[in-house]
Length: 85
Image 1 (cartoon, one colour):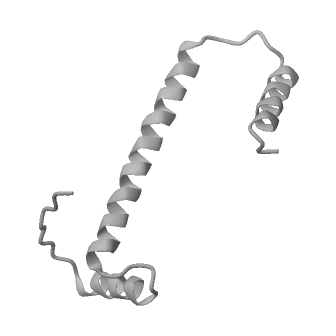
Image 2 (image 1 turned 135 degrees about the horizontal axis):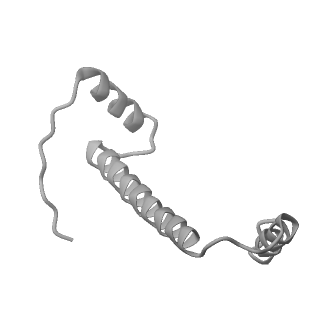
């Protein structure tokens, strides 16, 4: 993997926070911590994009003719099928 060196400037309070995260043992150094932050941000942006797509699909699907109990049963069945309940 090709790596690019970046230089950043952060306030002392943030630097203290980063050092605390490293001292906790979760990260080996500053770079690992910042890479983890970037990965989390990428995951969050992807989840937001997927959610917006689902919302758009829902809005475009029109008004349902199903009753609330029918909808709730469908949700419950799906959760059971996915092993979430």
